[in-house]
Amino acid sequence: MDTIQSARSMHQRDLTCQTLGIHLDDLGPGRARMRMRVAATMTNGHGTVHGGYLFLLADAAFAYACNSHGPAAVAQGAQVTFLRPAAVDDELVAEAVERARAGRTGVYDVTVRRAAGEVVAEFRGQSMMLSGRPAVAPGH
Image (cartoon, rainbow, N blue to C red; front, side, top):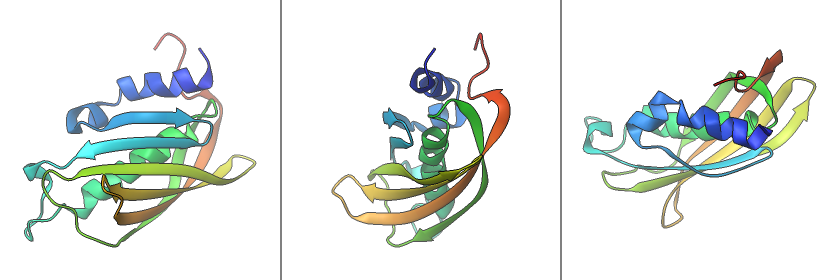
């Protein structure tokens, strides 16, 4: 199984993404694009999307981008800046792009947009590759 197929296989077993309807639309070396339609159950007391769901979507795109190289990678840190609210029925798209890799550490930027293109959030994640462990264990 090549590294991209391995990351796609990881998505098929990702119960969080499957439960929330987060789709993996595109995947390549160091990049990923995912989308999610906002459900009413994702809103906060202001009637807008809870920031945790925006972070989760960005974090998922980050996860697949940093696991697209083969060795298993995990987050060692992340930050998010919320720029605009999102609402019920918005389709959100998160695009993750690798900015740098040095040794076992990677830096990835993720932009979350509404389908129409307005930027909702910016996320930066730092990954750490786990030595000797593939993104997907053989036989899974």
